Image (cartoon, rainbow, N blue to C red; front, side, top):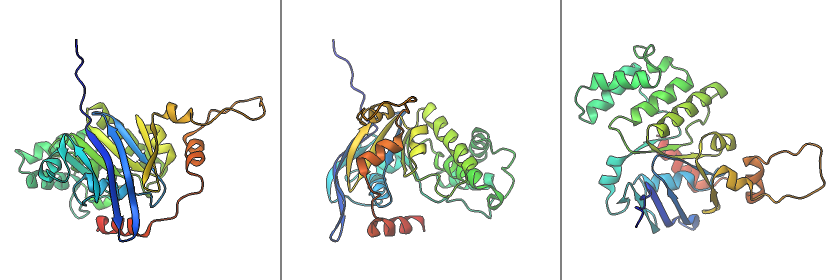
Length: 271
């Protein structure tokens, strides 16, 4: 009797990328299972955005292979784009249009039937119905990001890339986005999340990979990563469970210096 193997939604094997003499990715390997939240955790300049741009077919790798939804990102970019959605570090909404008009516009560009019904369903799903007739420029940071994610879901992509989705948001807005990401996974969407916020990875991820100096130095569940810290030292009255921050700093040490090429790539992507 054989058991069917579930094909990873995302598979990355030996991916490398350099910008002139700067090696940003030095051979990255990981799998992401369907319907899960996978957090790619790393300091500024670790190569997170570069990897997302490769997986979303916006950038070509120098070496290695990657498949998304079973399609090779280098050989089958069109099929990959049909299967994914990418939400960058800054909300890409038109602030002159209302929330509903933003959604209708994207539905029309995707040639979907009944764009208005698509927009209304997403407004309800993301608790934006009452704000749907307001200009997006009047939205709070959390509402604007939720609208941005809603726009990304038009066309029902099976995989969504969220690149630093809570950058610049206040604590309440971050919680709103976290709830949205959890709902996506509960609905069966595969989420690859890049973040430098340790609490974000702790709150959201089924698995966490730590990207440091261009390679994955650890990959596992939160519980597995916490076990990496050795027990020891003098006994104390209250034993504190190690946090992801403790694990991250123990593995990475001093924060990595910002990679100029990575930063430049990020700025171009946001324009």
